[in-house]
Image 1 (cartoon, rainbow, N blue to C red):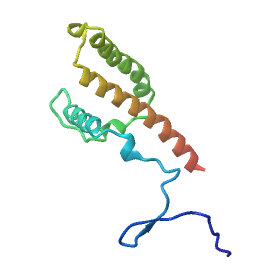
Image 2: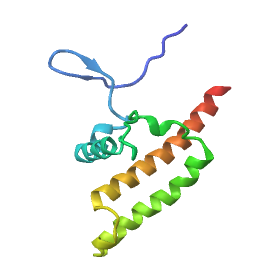
Image 3: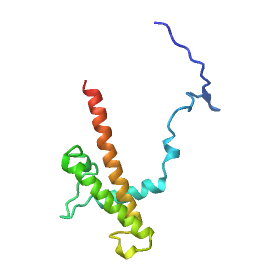
Image 4: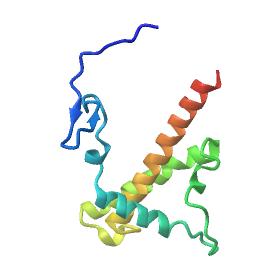
Length: 129
């Protein structure tokens, strides 16, 4: 088999270690905010305890993620949390069910849950073949 050569400029540091270039690679570290990730983690930890006092696993939300019931409730839930944020934004804090950080974290959860459902189905279908 013939080895392919690429016209690529490798990176290197003072130790002599070489690495492939960063061009075209997602810079996840730069795209994310550690404050947001920390806040979201605290939100998820708080909601890991159910109303009956039992603690569920952190990834419990993925169970049944493709069920009709789960997917049907996401838009309503996201809208309720968006409404809370909107009320706060417009100066009606007392009408909101939560504070703004809680409302935003809840929306983030709903968005990630929905996107997870879509991508999970996409990749499961892709690799089922």
